[in-house]
Image (cartoon, one colour):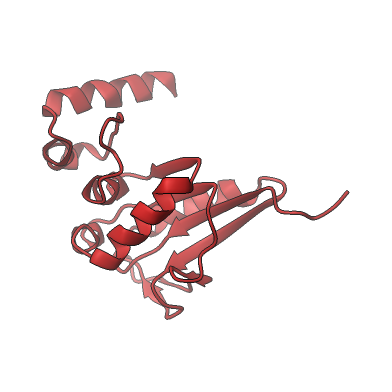
Length: 155
């Protein structure tokens, strides 16, 4: 048996993100065999979450390989700045072109929508941000609610 990496998964981290939105998926992804999980940010400087936890990125946007899975966590307030951050949005667009799966947790979907990566796709987010996501996707909020109900029932 070899230790070759089959899957490369990138979790984008950013100041003000919700720690659990990153560490939950990280724990699950890291248990997958033959998988490399990378914490990504603009620099290798520590990133502070909305809860005050400091997390170290492993790879910069510039040095990031092509990803099989791109995952964007949410943030109570951190996502607002990221929705307007040109470097973040361009990185997501570039990786989104080749990633097999582009996904998010909670309000991370707002960042993906701001990058234009959710057009034509069904999406969901935390209920308190449903109106903002609907506005970004040019949908009626009730359309997102029905998606959230479907996802909850399917789980």
